[in-house]
Every structure is written in C-alpha cells, then in structure tokens.
Image (cartoon, rainbow, N blue to C red; front, side, top):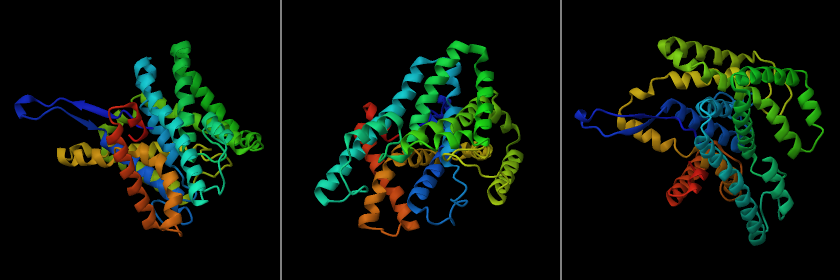
Length: 353
C-alpha cells in the first residue's frame, strides 16, 4: 500500500547542501493519521469519542483509495510498464505473504496454547479463499483493500492502452453507473445474499470504483496543484465543509459494504485538500527528516496490527483501552521498522514500507 509521493529536490552546491528526498509530507502525515484511525477502529471500536467520531465516519479506507489512485495517474497516463510492475509488487507481496503468516501463526498458537482468535485450526481451503478474494473466512480483514487496488490497477492500465483518449470519459460514465447501482440498493441487495467472502470483495469493488476514478480524474486535471495558488482560503473552506459533513450528517447513509455513497468521495477530497495544501514543506530539514521516519511504515502497521491486536488483548489489555490502542500502534511500528531493516535489500521490504 506505499505511495511514490516523493519530490526530488536538487539543492544548489554553493549552499553546501546535499541532494535529499523530500516527501509531499502533508500526504505522508495524512497516511499516518488514517492508519492510526484504522488501528483505533479495529482495536477500540466500542467507543466513539476520539478523532472525529469513529461510528458513522469511517472515511479511512476510502481516503486511502483516493490517495492511491491520485498518484497512480502518471503510471497510467504514461503507460509506464516498469512503474506498473513496481506498484503490483508493492501490493502483491503483502497480499500473498500476510495471509500465509496469519495462517501459520494462528495454527501454531492453537497447537501450543490451545488458543487463537478462531479457537480451532485453520484449513488450507480457508487460506486459498483469502488469497483468491482478499477476504476469506478467517483472513486479514485489511487485505481486501489490496485486492481492490490490484484489480483496478490492472483494469486501468489495460483499458487505457485500448481506449486511449476515450479512457477517462468512459470510466467517468462507469463511475456514474456505479452510483446508480449503489443508491438504488441493487449492489447491496444482490451481493448481500452471497457468503461474506464473495459479497464483500465484489460489493466493495463496485463501491470503491468511483473513488478510484474520481481521484484519477482530479490528478488528470491538476486540481490540487491549482488550489495551491490560494492555500489559506481553500484550507479554510475544506475544513468548514468537513465539519458539516461529519457533525451534521448531511449525506444520508446507504446500505453497502463499507464504502457506499458519494459521501466518501467528497470527504476524501476535502481531507486530501487540507493535508496537501498545508505548507509542511516550510519545516526545516531536520523536522522533515524526522517526519520521514515516523510516517514511513504505514504498510506494515496497516497489516501487522490486525494480527497483533488479538494477542495483546489476550495477555495485556483485555478490555481494549485507548492507551492499549496507542501501544498497539507503537508495537506494530516497531516490528515494521525491524522487518524493514532486515529485508531492506530485498523486495520483502514492501511488507513494511
């Protein structure tokens, strides 16, 4: 799930400054914030007092989709096969390896302690289902996100090659059709009758496709770069709109598979706008370097917390406290950091960063 949101800035040699990589730091901070919200939701979902209310405002994954497809645009528009391969590696490696890890660790825990989350041995059939659909009976719940990204990335790349100039308008029409299917309840009522490992992946594909197309289209029009000409005004109005969206529920909820409705498009747009426009780049180099380190491992945290949380609750924090959530984030960060150091010279580093 790691985005290539770096800008290479060559500093003048006369200033005696070396070349360095500077992220679009606002987006990296946003990714860290969204990742913490996901950990909070999974670990501490019984309460709704923290961080813009959890219940009814689960914008984290839709916003991650928005970010991912906004930065996918250059890969598709340039039909860059090398960047496509890199993106698919970043997605497929965690998508394949984490379910295997969960399957092995859960079965070992049951054999040794007579306990795991499922209170039984997991079957190989269940593992296969998770690998095929990203959402098995037992699996890592967060990997349906990778499943959707993989499917859409391939579809976008192939379609752009065949449709060429008609690609964007064709997919914008498809996005409109997707919303008609969602708001007419056809999507939910049709797929809801199937088992969860069928309904969730396919239903989610229909719901997240408009998000992907919307973000992709905005990147095509350079929307956020144009907004930088009046940063303060646009940050202010984005914050006002978000306040009304989240506090007054101006969009009626509709039944779906976690990403239904146009609310996710609009809220993702304003959230992205705020973090994109805040001039974090004006921070000094030491602060930027520190931020690069603490925002780097959201991929590993996103995936590892789902496994770690059950054993943390079993041994240390049975009630699932807010402090426990912070500890879970730190533990997941630590294992992601160590894992990256061990595998940084191999493609397994994509498991963590």
